[in-house]
Length: 193
Image (cartoon, rainbow, N blue to C red; front, top):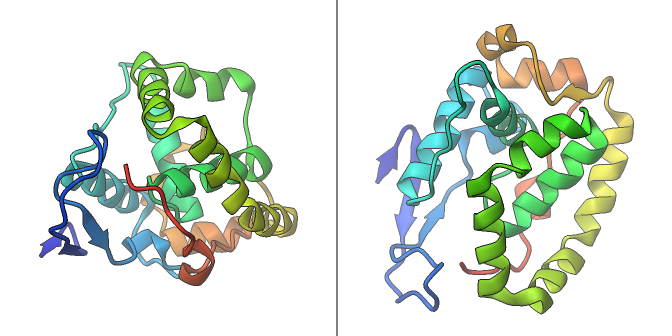
């Protein structure tokens, strides 16, 4: 099946917990998980949101006059990560070390009620020990990300100029010196939720 240019392959084994999606889907790499992605940033965000919808995940929207959700979604595209628990950990590292931001900007997203509730529910579901294990499994990529962010030409602005939405992702990565993780580097043991 193909959705928004994203090829998918369904699995049929039953879910193991209430947080696990009933129809688990193995996504081939999302289009923006290719270093030389030819999509514009706007198209990459659209593909990211299509991936969320396809996997029955809530797509957040910005309140009028704010761009916090768009800013967050664009970081998934620029740094080439999906929404798996482990890749969300990777994104935290990318943002922390590879973006310019204010704490106010970051808390505007993470402090949203639906984000905070989701995070609490997820940790309750998988437990603190499993969360800690996932953090440990992500450590090799923390070091890779740290090295790559040090080699960036300049940091990506978390609240980015919206005219960049019409630029190709590959060009933005070249301009900022972003070298995303390869599929092999992202291939770590994952939590099913």
